[in-house]
Length: 186
Image 1 (cartoon, rainbow, N blue to C red):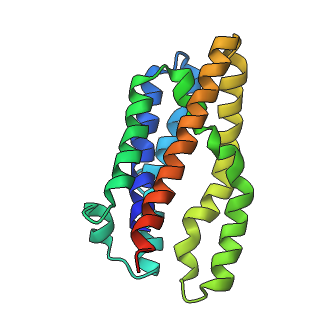
Image 2: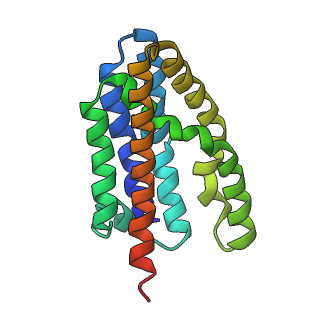
């Protein structure tokens, strides 16, 4: 939980780097919603606050999540590499790296029902992050696909987008590996 939170809290940072490079005003206006969805705004909590409530629902202290001291080194390295990738790479490759979201909508619905079934002690409001993403994510996915399909017109660009997506899959795989390695030591 605390390790995934480190990933979650860095998503708006990653999205801010992408936002600064998008060439069109309309796309920037649409992209900024991703940052708002996670960071929230005055009077409207965002996904990070909802994720904190999930942590609290499973028994973690808010400060433990926010200070990040217990984040595994492998997780920190992978997440920081992803943020740096989106800072350094051209906007199209950075956007393409987020295409892992294509696989998430069905997983979110299943995750909610599985948690409710197998972990009934977790307060229902702790799952609000996932419920909110059910409506946010389809819009994000549509925009991602639109940007990549309309702009990756050469074979070179398409290959670069594939490499970016592969990199992001490696990041997610590394997160899981780090957690499994740490918590399967018993």
